Length: 124
Image 1 (cartoon, helix red, strand yellow):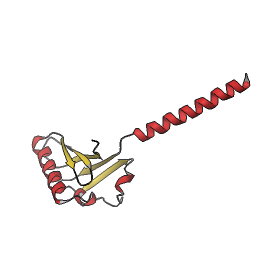
Image 2 (cartoon, rainbow, N blue to C red; image 1 turned 120 degrees about the vertical axis):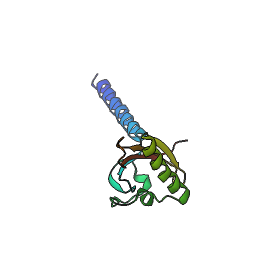
Image 3 (cartoon, rainbow, N blue to C red; image 1 turned 135 degrees about the horizontal axis):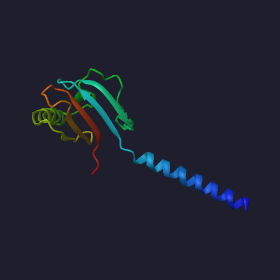
């Protein structure tokens, strides 16, 4: 009887650990920035974004420089910021060089230029 209880408890522990590990790997990888009107980083938070290998010393730097965007992606990102502010709506931009997707949201509908940018891996 004791061995059955011990076996059941061990099996439960293994299953619970496996479930927690699988949930951790399924959590979205995300990097959030707040930007001023010059697309300079004023704040950030991250979740499982070690794959980007970014230095955390990027406050005040341009997000396009920090993400090492090529000319095409840089142009698309800046156009996305402009479009988000003009429309006062969220805009999504694909950053092909790094296989990332940026969601750009204006933080104010009053015309002040500040943005929240969420960067995630672009899943196909």
